[in-house]
Length: 99
Length: 238
Image 1: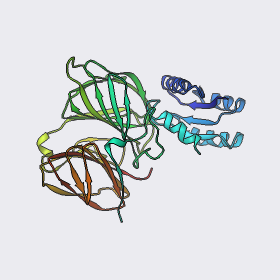
Image 2 (image 1 turned 60 degrees about the vertical axis):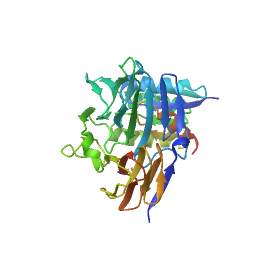
Image 3 (image 1 turned 90 degrees about the vertical axis):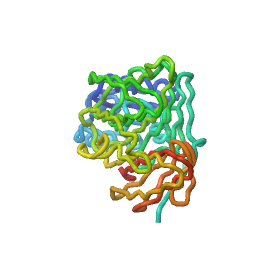
Image 4 (image 1 turned 180 degrees about the vertical axis):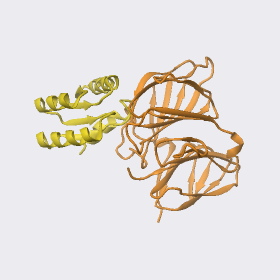
């Protein structure tokens, strides 16, 4: 079964790139959310192993989302993604999976 | 007591894509080594060679301070802020990706390859307005002395980035030495040897070796041969 990864970010094109890169790995399944509501909806409906927080998310949103995700599924790993999909993504996911 | 880490040149990750030959000091793209993730907020040190006429097509970045230093040949940069620039051998460019930016990097020369360092540093402030800064360095200013090429301060020597970091270049004749005093509390220094052999305190380093030193106030760099090196002082915690 593929590892489900939710990417959340405000820049639609970068988010699209991140999701595409996730899905390039045959062992991972990525989905993207542009808004907080969309992210919570997706997270509630599926068993995501990892949540990637991408660029542009406001501090208040991030705090609220972390609290919501922890309440819904404390086993999900929330990771700050840096770089906009270029080069760091795989290492961040592998590190999260190693926890 | 100082803590140190040695990364010999041959232990770097390596990716060869035909047009691109890249050595990664830290985990990057398909090179993953959990023991080599970063040195403090220094996250990426890539030693790239790009064939004539080739390059990286448009791709995104966000929330990273990206520093490019051509070592041989020139690199053309285009970004989504409508900046078009040639980063020449002797220049340094810093780009704050912030909320997000797209850019491409190409070797426009039809005959000569370009060799450059690409360095990524975690910013101390997320989601900043994207910006970039580029200057031409005076090569004489690094001959037998340390030339500051990057700092946190827009009014200081070199380019500036959103991080409490300082970079210096040195091109030393054999036998020349100097002391480096750490500028920021809690900072460490990662030294990358561009050419030749240097000693940091008692540690001998060869071409393309990396060496990190922290929990110290200062250290000595001595050129065992004619040598060129890059010092990257960065916060160890973030």
